[in-house]
Amino acid sequence: MISSLIRAFPSQVTSSISTSQRDILIVDDTPENLRLLSQMLMQHGYNVRKARNGKMALMAVQTMLPDIILLDIMMPNMDGYEVCQQLKSDPKTAQIPVVFLSALDEVMDKVNAFKVGGADYITKPFQIEEVLTRVEHQLSLKQAEAEIRELNSRLEERVKERTQQLQAVVHELELEIQQRKQAEHQLLEMALHDALTGLPNRVLLAQRLQNTITRASLDPDYHFAVLFLDCDRFKVINDSLGHRVGDQLLVALASRIQAHLQSEDTLARLGGDEFAIILGNSPDLNHATQVAQNILESLEHPFQLEECEVFTNVSIGIVFGDSYRTLHERNADQPEHLLRDADNAMYRAKEGGRGTYHVFDPTMHQIALERLNLETELRYALNRNEFLLHYQPIVHLKSGKIQGFEALIRWHSPTRGLVSPSQFIPITEETGLIVPLGQWVLKEACSQLRQWQKLGLVNDSMSISVNLTAHQFTQVDFCQQLDQILAETGLSPHHLKLEITESTIMDNQRSAQSILQQLKSRHISLSIDDFGTGYSSLSYLHAFPVDILKVDRSFVQSLDGSREKLGLIPAIFSITQAMGMSAIAEGIETAIQLDQLRHLNYEFGQGYFFSKPLPSEAVVELLKQDPQW
Image 1 (cartoon, rainbow, N blue to C red):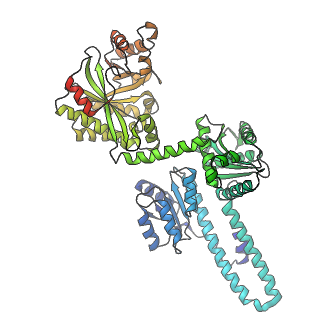
Image 2: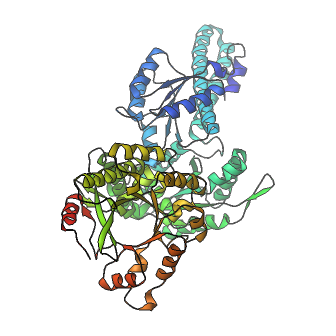
Image 3: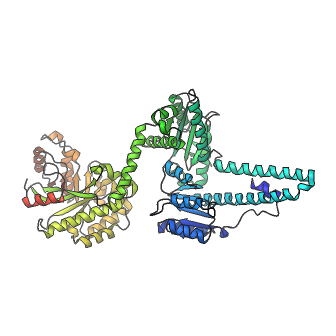
């Protein structure tokens, strides 16, 4: 496109500007993100400016207009969407391309970014090669548009100058108009197609999908379906074989998918390893699922890329136009809603084992909305002091006296009431909220035991047990955080026991050895929770300084007084005896279970037979009673 215009005015247009002249403004509230991204961009010759928030960004833009802005979405006070809207509403800054950089990866997040005027969207974590390519692409588009405006201006001047020159002027004018239209057409093609595969991009897909929806609303005999595809294991291939092979795989994948589509169908690349298909004139849902099955079967054969065979497959979500319209009449004319629900169905396919397809069910959208609302409420819950701890006694089975307590988190939501940890803990782990939440649990539990000590309610042998997640355990400064909590609460480390699962250790073996040794040096006891349900490997018990094994409740609850139901319980106790450990039986609910465990010489146990988890006020009353079971 631009090459043809340069040939028309060789003395007036330059091909490009050097990267040292290109000014990039990075807006991100995370200093580490700013530092790393600016460092990498400056290494490639760009002039980089930084802003920590939206207000600073708007001030920086007014001071000097950047060539491009890399903008984070999730920022305090003023998010990226609002910053972009203000930039686009000001004629002076409206032409500056804005590329969103965000960890948000939902379809609606990306659609909203383009709605407020974003030029591109890069999902974190990103590869610097991708950032550089997209930055260069946007700068090239911006330069091309400037060149076209300049050429158009000069073209108009030339038309005025040569109006008097009749046929010669007319011939030259027609030639230049043709070149102008060709350049505009090429720009439009660039804006609507994916540079790597040549397929329609997200913008063109949305236009075609809107046309398809309109046609279906006018013609009751016209039916369609939308398929959302995500490449399985693409990141592994990209990281191991390189981005060039990854790009070759995407091109080959698109070609193989296209072979199963008809001329009225549309295959688009949405970005990364995501594709979408509009099946035009799809007679019924069976046709859509058959197309999906054909695509999956074709991908069972390897791709030959640079003398190496690569196997990959896709997960596919399907939305059929007729059923969707029936269920969502109000929003059936919104392409983004179709793509959103197809995307949700695709993730359900991934959960089902990858390399398969899943048809959209309207309950999936409600589940997604509920999960989003729950996540939003969780982000405020910690600051609003909505979490609390309950404490379940750990009993010395021979004496029947309380030996310690396990701290168990609860969420008292003002709208939902008391929420079970099974509902919110997985979300906190996925979002990273588990780290500050885990710190709060540790500090609250230590503070509570220390308070009971000061009140004289517990003796010096009493301990508090706190569960750790893998996210907490792998924090580089976890031991330093723990030292600070113990110092602030005044609790001796001898009274603290940390519980982790086998998988936490086995999945982080490199760091586990060091962390566990540091905990041991602080005289903090370590318990393996739910033992017997995971690896149950004696090798790691030898390698790591473990003090206690907690027998999973599934073993204990099967006890009925007979020897046949003992299962692994005697074997686990023998392991603890041989290795100098203690054993705690979880889930004791009946006197028969307690009696069997006592005959097996188990030292400690906990369960509803003794007490359910209690709030701190109820624990105080229980301690005053000094119960003995």
